[in-house]
Image (cartoon, rainbow, N blue to C red; front, side, top):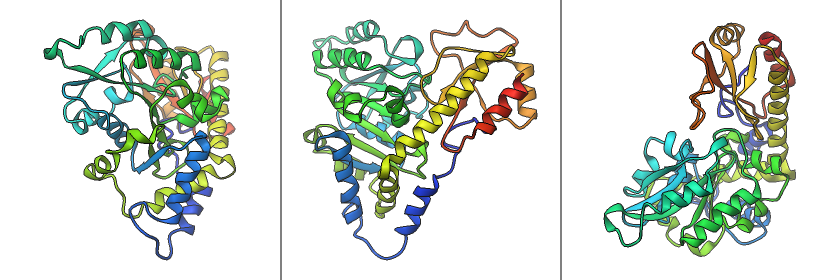
Length: 349
């Protein structure tokens, strides 16, 4: 009953097999192999347009380099209060963008509230040099609250970005989970809605170590090769990242994996709703669930072998949890089974 993180799950067998298949022999280095080029072409097909793709090793690297690529002196990046870039990346976006600041924006369900975003941007008027200048907006899809921005919600943020001349970045660490939840195409969730740059995650969805920085407009990527090299993210044997993506995309494996993880999360959510010993903090759309359980019951679940993280209630939900309760995060993955879920619900009671 491992519900700690989709990062805990290993590699999907098809992805492991692809790594093994490409382990022998020789291939040109630094992203110049035929396999690298094949996968880059696949990204073009997936997004229905020419994109610029840069493989990196971690989601933190993808996010940090994305924001670095649009850096401005005194730059300010707007993100949700609980976004991964501001809460869980140890200052890496600020470091790699040479001191840009992250300005938190409020909003329920892990989503940026458009009105709050406008108000926060207004705090940095163009003529007031002391405050710095707006640099970018970044949103997380799926969110850190397990919810998913609907297309009209992305469009509303994109309209604000365009009105202020700001690039819009999407942190897609769980991109596939959000995509299958909405049942739309990658382009319909990004470029068609005005997203400029995407951190495309594969690691949480069955890959061993595969992330990509995707520029939906290749003209925005002119400095990206140098930014990636300077950040030590240009892998010499990049064919091993390409090998993962090659298997990931074949026959839509990536979407099947995400659908399975989401189904397991929905099964878990249904069980929690039916339990007398737990309640949901809110309804989730992807593969993260946030129940509120008494500390005593949580301890008994862990004694029976369940593993999950304590979780801080996100802003502005701090009043959801009573003194003798806790909020916890449960995450499903390609490796989660129905038996895992059913056993958890059985022990929960």
